[in-house]
Image (tube, rainbow, N blue to C red; front, side, top):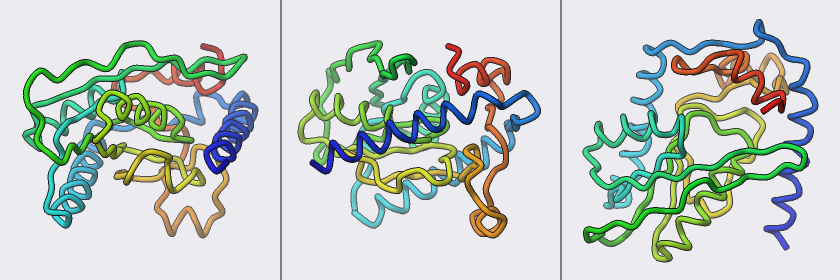
Length: 213
């Protein structure tokens, strides 16, 4: 029952988000520099390593959510000296809203040490519906695994907990939904505007958030 309620709430939010974002223009975007990407990578890595150090465990596998998660995941994998990678890819579709899986989860041909801790990686996380779906298919493939999420940015006002994901490690929250008041903007140091990463084009991102894909 709880799973159904969470799904309904997420899709209600996606619908609201889609409706309000259709009015946004280029001036509403906020391009991120490579310097900021590096800073956020360092924050995410520090949070992740601190968490697993407290458990006496380590990340076994990096699972980048392609495409942006491929950049984030590759950098984290190199920095954290993690060899095994499990890429996943989905396509967000509109009218009707759906998240379509694009590739199957690969097989790991070498031995995986126990416990199996998989770190999903993405650039920006809003409702988290893609990450939740990714966690589900990863657990179907590797039932004993625990799944975590590392994301450079996370949209303020979205769910704190994501189904099937143990913890979320993020670098900074954004104000992309324009739901925060002035006090919250200062308290959480919210990144203003629609985040556009250095490897992205603002025009393409606007088409995506406005549902014209």
